[in-house]
Image (cartoon, rainbow, N blue to C red; front, side, top):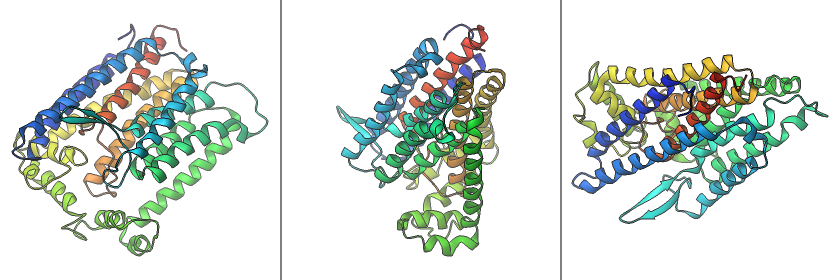
Length: 388
């Protein structure tokens, strides 16, 4: 790590990497019972992604600078992001989504999810085109059209071509938050429009997730049946209790069993009872069942340290590119928390969004650690008085 990095953020991300690997190992015990290789391979793959994330984080913490965003090399990041998203279309879908690139590796394979890394790209795109610019544009649209269309293409590929609505929703919310940061006068009208759209969508979502919205969900033609059932299960977990509501009920049962201090690491009962997403979407349920509400509070504390430290530096740093990146990274973590915890507890429909650094799935882990590395580079530069 470079001189001037934030020790609190680094300590929290290290603790999360260890915490997540341990919980993934425990949660994976109930999957493919009798196949010891599955548990070993799952943990080894997670460790490899953590190591890759550490390498990326340290490399970027020492090498990343704001000037990179203004160079022609940044265009390569945009092209690689879009190309990797399109490459997923040549691989078979999982759960109805073509969101992974699979690399054979002996007796197993490594799956990469480019849409996770695209979330970091979205933050950098807004910072590159909208942050720290004094230029006067001919129109408001001229200023935001390039980042708007690039992000629209990314979200379109992820939602329409890949069929991964959850990742698209996260990318869109991150982009919304990043677009709100720049103070350029010609951004104000666009920021106001985005805020109005966000409020309308929020009100519509609250209505749909209420009992009054049941008829609306059933009559939406572009939603597939399993997607409608996820909405209905969020409204009433027992609506389809033996199908789409099964995991939600199991998850809520795990929360109830866990209590304050849990049953102990490795002692979950529900992970052995046909809980297919025990180490991915619903890993929080297993964490609470084994570690209790105290274990959940420990997780929230580590998340809270990262978010608060990033936002604290965002308030200090005057450079808008840096502020967009710091706020965007905190939004990245916060939005993932909202979608995953909300889905597991039945507050919102399950979207398949992972719990960062905790859910099995190395792409999200490596991607977030990459974002933290970029933030540490900016924080270190600020603390060394190289960035205002």
